[in-house]
Length: 160
Image (cartoon, rainbow, N blue to C red; front, side, top):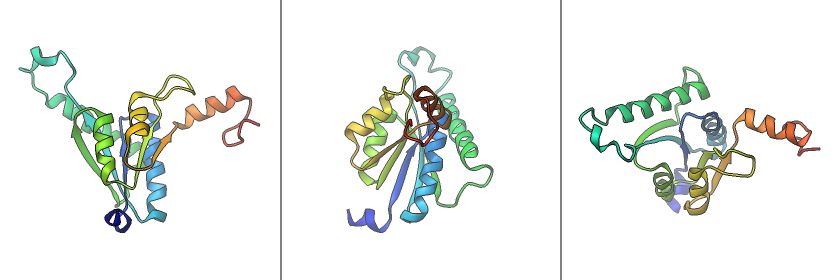
């Protein structure tokens, strides 16, 4: 734990969604006061049943994840990425990789990908249930506005 206190690290799961862009922005905002670095992790894998097409290669999957990560970083920060934000491209299942990565993190941030305000996505659920550090789940800005509207209020008013 002492190493984490000296060099805090925030890991952000990035899948290119609006929620993951919001998670990146949140991580960058928290990094300053915490004196932490941010690692933006994009995870990719070969879909089940792809074995027949291995002649084509798996580089396309890796490349797509890399492009998605770069687009998310640009959406979050514009052309000038903060110097304390680093990237990692990981092969495997996102939930498993993020949980394992959380062993060496001070904070794990993921976006919520569920279909309603009450259901979390499988990756965020896995992280909440199994991470080895605190987990922050971030809603996409439009999603939060829609939830506030459904409650008859405004974002940040607690539904009043």
